[in-house]
Image (cartoon, rainbow, N blue to C red; front, side, top):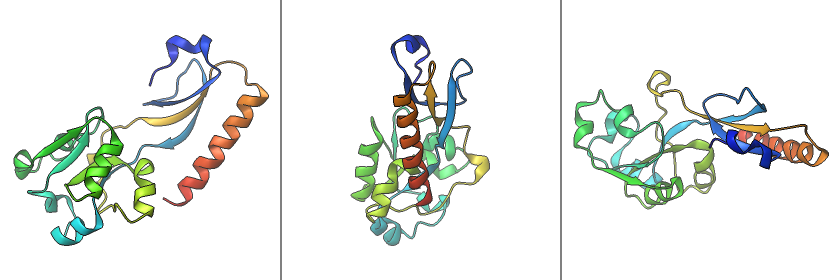
Length: 167
Protein backbone atom coordinates (compact mmCIF):
# COMPACT_ATOMS: atom_id res chain seq x y z
CA UNK A 1 0.00 0.00 0.00
CA UNK A 2 1.26 3.50 -0.80
CA UNK A 3 -0.09 6.29 1.32
CA UNK A 4 2.31 9.04 0.14
CA UNK A 5 -0.42 10.89 -1.72
CA UNK A 6 -2.73 11.13 1.28
CA UNK A 7 -0.34 11.96 4.12
CA UNK A 8 -2.32 15.09 4.93
CA UNK A 9 -5.39 12.99 5.70
CA UNK A 10 -3.90 10.45 8.13
CA UNK A 11 -1.79 10.34 11.29
CA UNK A 12 -0.28 6.88 10.92
CA UNK A 13 -0.48 3.71 8.88
CA UNK A 14 0.80 0.18 8.56
CA UNK A 15 2.44 0.03 5.16
CA UNK A 16 3.59 -2.90 3.05
CA UNK A 17 6.58 -1.73 1.02
CA UNK A 18 10.11 -2.67 0.00
CA UNK A 19 11.78 0.09 2.03
CA UNK A 20 10.71 2.73 4.52
CA UNK A 21 9.30 5.98 3.21
CA UNK A 22 12.09 8.57 3.38
CA UNK A 23 9.53 11.37 3.77
CA UNK A 24 7.96 9.95 6.92
CA UNK A 25 8.85 8.37 10.23
CA UNK A 26 8.67 4.67 9.31
CA UNK A 27 9.74 1.85 11.63
CA UNK A 28 10.08 -1.79 10.62
CA UNK A 29 7.25 -3.76 12.17
CA UNK A 30 8.12 -7.19 10.70
CA UNK A 31 9.41 -8.88 7.56
CA UNK A 32 7.28 -10.81 5.12
CA UNK A 33 8.54 -14.40 5.31
CA UNK A 34 7.31 -16.39 2.32
CA UNK A 35 6.66 -20.07 3.05
CA UNK A 36 4.83 -23.02 1.53
CA UNK A 37 1.86 -24.19 3.62
CA UNK A 38 -0.34 -27.24 3.32
CA UNK A 39 -2.61 -29.37 5.41
CA UNK A 40 -0.70 -31.77 7.67
CA UNK A 41 -2.67 -34.62 6.08
CA UNK A 42 -1.52 -33.70 2.55
CA UNK A 43 2.09 -33.31 3.72
CA UNK A 44 1.98 -36.78 5.27
CA UNK A 45 0.09 -38.45 2.43
CA UNK A 46 2.38 -37.04 -0.28
CA UNK A 47 5.55 -37.10 1.85
CA UNK A 48 6.31 -33.42 1.17
CA UNK A 49 9.65 -32.36 2.62
CA UNK A 50 11.39 -30.38 -0.14
CA UNK A 51 10.62 -28.46 -3.32
CA UNK A 52 10.99 -31.51 -5.58
CA UNK A 53 8.18 -33.18 -3.63
CA UNK A 54 5.76 -30.59 -5.08
CA UNK A 55 5.88 -32.34 -8.45
CA UNK A 56 2.29 -33.11 -9.56
CA UNK A 57 0.74 -31.33 -6.58
CA UNK A 58 -1.55 -28.33 -7.23
CA UNK A 59 0.11 -25.07 -6.22
CA UNK A 60 -2.02 -22.30 -4.75
CA UNK A 61 -1.08 -18.62 -4.84
CA UNK A 62 -2.60 -15.18 -4.50
CA UNK A 63 -2.85 -12.87 -7.50
CA UNK A 64 -0.86 -9.95 -6.14
CA UNK A 65 2.04 -11.66 -4.35
CA UNK A 66 5.43 -10.55 -5.67
CA UNK A 67 6.86 -14.06 -5.35
CA UNK A 68 4.90 -16.60 -7.40
CA UNK A 69 5.23 -20.34 -7.66
CA UNK A 70 6.46 -19.96 -11.24
CA UNK A 71 9.19 -17.52 -10.19
CA UNK A 72 10.31 -19.75 -7.31
CA UNK A 73 10.23 -23.00 -9.28
CA UNK A 74 11.50 -21.72 -12.64
CA UNK A 75 14.53 -24.07 -12.54
CA UNK A 76 12.41 -27.14 -11.88
CA UNK A 77 11.52 -28.79 -15.23
CA UNK A 78 8.40 -30.41 -13.79
CA UNK A 79 6.98 -27.13 -12.47
CA UNK A 80 5.48 -26.06 -15.81
CA UNK A 81 3.18 -29.09 -15.68
CA UNK A 82 1.90 -28.46 -12.15
CA UNK A 83 -1.59 -27.01 -11.92
CA UNK A 84 -1.63 -23.54 -10.35
CA UNK A 85 -4.71 -22.27 -8.55
CA UNK A 86 -4.73 -18.47 -8.34
CA UNK A 87 -7.02 -16.72 -5.86
CA UNK A 88 -7.48 -13.10 -4.95
CA UNK A 89 -6.73 -13.20 -1.21
CA UNK A 90 -4.35 -15.08 1.07
CA UNK A 91 -7.13 -16.30 3.35
CA UNK A 92 -8.67 -18.11 0.35
CA UNK A 93 -5.32 -19.70 -0.53
CA UNK A 94 -4.91 -20.80 3.08
CA UNK A 95 -8.45 -22.19 3.18
CA UNK A 96 -7.89 -24.26 0.03
CA UNK A 97 -4.57 -25.53 1.39
CA UNK A 98 -6.12 -26.41 4.76
CA UNK A 99 -8.75 -28.47 2.92
CA UNK A 100 -6.02 -30.44 1.11
CA UNK A 101 -6.41 -28.95 -2.38
CA UNK A 102 -2.68 -28.22 -2.71
CA UNK A 103 0.26 -26.29 -1.32
CA UNK A 104 -0.19 -22.55 -0.88
CA UNK A 105 2.44 -19.86 -1.08
CA UNK A 106 1.95 -17.36 1.70
CA UNK A 107 3.17 -15.08 4.45
CA UNK A 108 4.12 -16.93 7.64
CA UNK A 109 2.66 -14.20 9.87
CA UNK A 110 -0.70 -14.45 8.10
CA UNK A 111 -0.74 -18.25 8.25
CA UNK A 112 0.47 -18.55 11.85
CA UNK A 113 -3.00 -18.84 13.40
CA UNK A 114 -3.90 -21.76 11.14
CA UNK A 115 -0.51 -23.35 11.84
CA UNK A 116 -1.12 -23.00 15.58
CA UNK A 117 -4.51 -24.70 15.10
CA UNK A 118 -2.79 -27.55 13.18
CA UNK A 119 -4.87 -26.79 10.09
CA UNK A 120 -1.73 -25.83 8.12
CA UNK A 121 1.95 -26.73 8.38
CA UNK A 122 5.15 -25.59 6.70
CA UNK A 123 6.64 -28.69 5.02
CA UNK A 124 10.03 -27.03 4.25
CA UNK A 125 11.67 -23.63 3.98
CA UNK A 126 12.79 -22.12 0.71
CA UNK A 127 16.52 -21.58 0.21
CA UNK A 128 17.35 -17.95 1.05
CA UNK A 129 18.78 -17.26 -2.42
CA UNK A 130 15.51 -18.31 -4.07
CA UNK A 131 13.27 -15.67 -2.48
CA UNK A 132 13.27 -12.31 -4.27
CA UNK A 133 13.28 -9.10 -2.21
CA UNK A 134 9.93 -8.98 -0.49
CA UNK A 135 8.14 -6.02 1.04
CA UNK A 136 8.14 -5.50 4.77
CA UNK A 137 5.53 -4.12 7.10
CA UNK A 138 6.27 -0.65 8.47
CA UNK A 139 4.49 1.48 11.02
CA UNK A 140 4.57 5.00 9.58
CA UNK A 141 3.84 8.25 11.40
CA UNK A 142 3.15 10.97 8.87
CA UNK A 143 3.53 14.08 11.02
CA UNK A 144 4.30 14.91 14.60
CA UNK A 145 3.24 12.02 16.82
CA UNK A 146 0.42 12.67 19.24
CA UNK A 147 -0.07 10.78 22.51
CA UNK A 148 -2.82 8.72 20.85
CA UNK A 149 -0.56 7.77 17.93
CA UNK A 150 2.26 6.94 20.36
CA UNK A 151 -0.09 4.70 22.36
CA UNK A 152 -1.28 2.97 19.17
CA UNK A 153 2.31 2.50 17.96
CA UNK A 154 3.38 1.03 21.31
CA UNK A 155 0.42 -1.34 21.35
CA UNK A 156 0.99 -2.49 17.72
CA UNK A 157 4.68 -3.12 18.37
CA UNK A 158 3.92 -5.06 21.57
CA UNK A 159 1.45 -7.26 19.68
CA UNK A 160 3.93 -7.77 16.82
CA UNK A 161 6.71 -8.62 19.29
CA UNK A 162 4.48 -11.13 21.08
CA UNK A 163 3.40 -12.70 17.76
CA UNK A 164 6.98 -13.01 16.55
CA UNK A 165 7.93 -15.02 19.66
CA UNK A 166 5.70 -17.81 18.38
CA UNK A 167 7.42 -17.94 14.99
